[in-house]
Amino acid sequence: MRELFRHLHDHDGVATCDDLRRLGVSWHRERRLLDIGVLDRVGPRVVRVTSTPESFQQRCRIATLGPGRGVISHGAAARLHRLNGFQSHDRVDLLCRRGSWPGHPGVIITHFTRGPVDEAVVTLSGIPVLDVPDTLALLAPHTGADLLERAVVSALDRGWTIARLRDGAERWTSRGRPGPRALETVLDELSRRNAQASTGANISSAAVHGSTRRPRTSSVNSSQRSPVHT
Image (tube, rainbow, N blue to C red; front, top):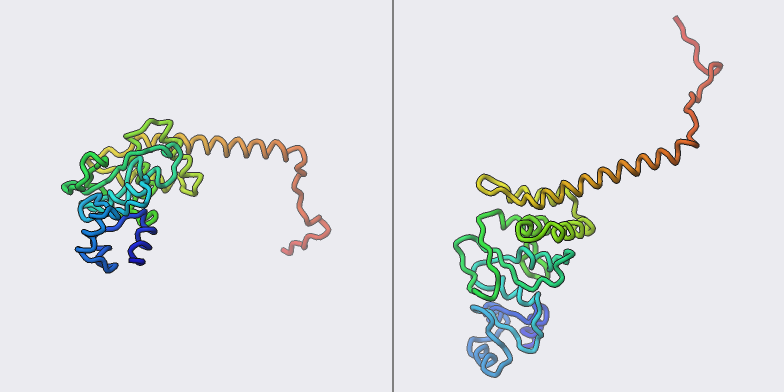
């Protein structure tokens, strides 16, 4: 049982039935733990230890462990990535392949897609989550411009570049899919501001150093130059 509770401690108090068997907990022992209230069944073949407080991250983990092989996306992914403006986002957004069924209707917000999900998944504390560029790309049509810009700026502050964020937008642009135009608009505006700031800094630097700059002269005078032989 020590291995079981170590696993639960490291995984927000959540485990699958496969985890239980791997850790030596039989089906009968699982039923006993459920009956006495040590464990609670929170999804198909997913249990939670009742002594662990519920949390947003725990709810995200539970959602991804259900049927459908979903990944956390949209506002929920923005919160897990700690992007500005989404600290209070409380809905669990789950992105699934079209045609799958995650098995949690009414508990999570399910999004379906035929888009390039697999190549854009990272893990945060063992939870599959869309990476930052793709999170912003899918989030763009569902949020206001000001909130989207705050999220983009915080992503840039964390080391992402405008080029990499633009790559995420382009991945979701194809025939029949217009793409996240709102994100491209924000990135274009930030690029324009950066260009203006860079130009202004160069002009200021030239103005400061212009009055003290000495004219460039040759370091070799006429007496030092080698004669020209014809």
